Length: 111
Length: 113
Image (cartoon, rainbow over all chains, first blue to last red; front, side, top):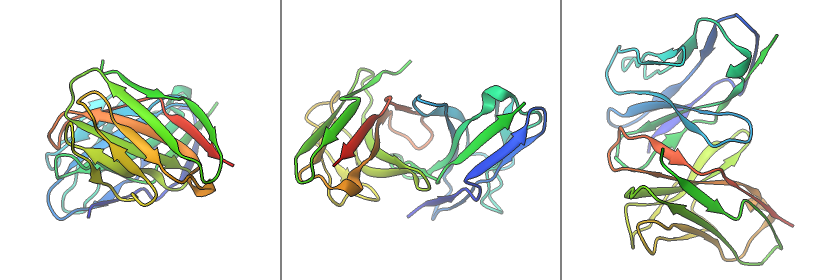
């Protein structure tokens, strides 16, 4: 089955610095990739998604480029804000129903 | 915005007891899901459903059953609750298709003592 790996469980950085959260995946086919964000005491919600190789969707200042050659979909932002502190999940779906999540990365942005 | 409602929001159960977690969605989505969330493990899929009457095993189905009696409702059943099932459970729904967004409920915090 599919699997998603997020190598960092915790990331702490200072406001204004760039953000990069890693995501790699293993899948038999060519899946759709997603980033979901979960703020404290809230439900996870979609941040952005992609299927097209080397295309860079953006939302709320975040972007991620799907690289099928390296099976990666890293999340980036040029300048972190305090409000970006949250739990971020990378996920993939290639079978139409089964959405598989990674272990999550908790991002903490400090002043 | 899609509405997914879970009940109860918090539950304390005794070991060996039966627990039913309920989920209702009002957006006529075909697919519904139950995940559990644990630190270090992320969101893990327990059961999912393609529509009324169907249930499928996810990645960690042992100790759990699911029921989808209608398009709107999807329940997760723990017949014999154990302390290892203490977790936060999320229900979600989405339309068919690999590229579609999934909408989550606010979660149920279950503690088994």
